[in-house]
Image 1 (cartoon, protein in one colour):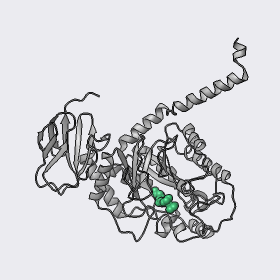
Image 2 (cartoon, helix red, strand yellow; image 1 turned 180 degrees about the horizontal axis):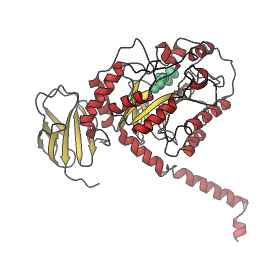
Image 3 (cartoon, rainbow, N blue to C red; image 1 turned 120 degrees about the vertical axis):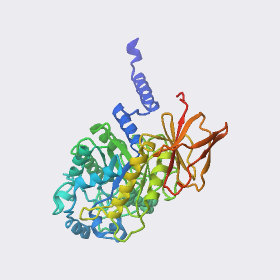
Image 4 (cartoon, rainbow, N blue to C red; image 1 turned 45 degrees about the vertical axis):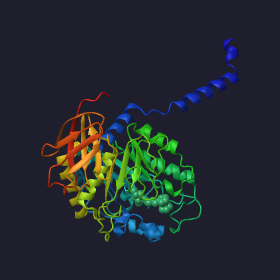
Amino acid sequence: MIRTFCSAGAVLLLGTAAHLEAQSAPNEPPPERLAARGWFRDAKFGMFIHWGVYSLLGQGEWVMQNRAIPVDRYEWLASTFNPVKFDAHEWVSVAKRAGVRYITITSRHHDGFSMFATRATRYNIVDWTPFARDPMKALADECRRQGIKLFFYYSQLDWHNADYWPRGGTGHATGRPESGDWNRYLDFMDQQLAELLTNYGPIGGIWFDGMWDKPDAKWRLDRTYALIHSLQPAALIVPNHHQAPLPGEDVQTFEQDLPGANTAGFNTREIGSLPLETSLTMNNAWGFNITDTSWKSPRELIGYLVRAAGRDANLLLNIGPRPDGTIQPEAVDRLQALGDWLARYGTSIYGTRGGPIPPRNWGVTTQRGDSVFVHVLDWPDEVLSIPSLGTRVMHASMLGTGERVNLVQTVDGIVLTLPTGKNDEPDRVIVLQTEHRKR
Ligand code: H79
């Protein structure tokens, strides 16, 4: 009987059923990755670093494309990269004072130059430059010492490697042969990713960028994501492909936009259930730009951090260090201002969730346990009406001074009277202590 049952047809049928079961139970990540996602949600503030050969020219990280620099000229430029003032301790200390919980740094940008020691190509900072050291290793070690997680930005787009073929939307003026082996390119990327996940201790994850250059190519994402997760099960995959999340990804990141907004023109408005992140420049450039002086003010930057938190998202705030390894004073000052602000108000940001009131023009709310933080960012008046929280507010006070805030509650909502003379502050934070809510 059993033998008949095990006919080839039945085995095939069983195989299909098992396959369907695997599909219907979406790949639940292992506990260590779920914990890492939880950590990421709580972290709220990261520092992005764009730094590479392009920094030498001071025209941003797209200079090779924008100025149509051929590969051989750019290779020469790369051979002069010598950031003698690079100091991992100094960089991580600046980050620490800013109150960031993680750093995401360009291990390889679209120019294809590896800023880390790799056996996959000689076109890397150790083998190609007089610097001859691995700054990613120094940063990884220093981050571990100072309790900051390190993520590696990794570009899937490559303007240097001939195997990045057929070309996508960019990289056409580089003088490369009009042929190449796409699968060899994917193997090259996997080899480098394996190095990044093996040689730097536990890392936060990989921040992918550039897939949008060839949206219809076979990127073998399943294989690459599985490789990453097999080497470090807790490493998060953060893809900047501007689309809704794909299987195997851990964070949904939005470039130059708060989640759901699309002022940049290329972000999806679809918000999934993964942890969220917004990446943002301090001026208009990612990589060092010597003429870009369009710095956002500390007040604006605090506003972004708070509005991101109110949408349950982290802010990944960028700096573009100079080619000698120093960080521009304008960036250091702004990071310090954010750190000073967080030292006073961080309890209303770190470890919170967005809501319960959806984002408004005047500001946002964040919450932790029975505390609701009302962040008043842009409201000229002392009196502010907000919708009901669905629970009774027991006490209201200003975060920082503890000053009592008068409030009138009805079933429809709450009217808050804020202390006078404070509406020029970047964020007036009111703590509402609510009645214990059943969850
Ligand atoms: O690393 C920084 C930038 O260099 C990189 N991402 C950040 C984090 C970046 N490259 N391009 N962009 C950001 C803007 C994207 C523009 C796009 Fe398009 C619009 C991608 C797809 C449509 C421009 C036009 C590039 C391809 C077609």
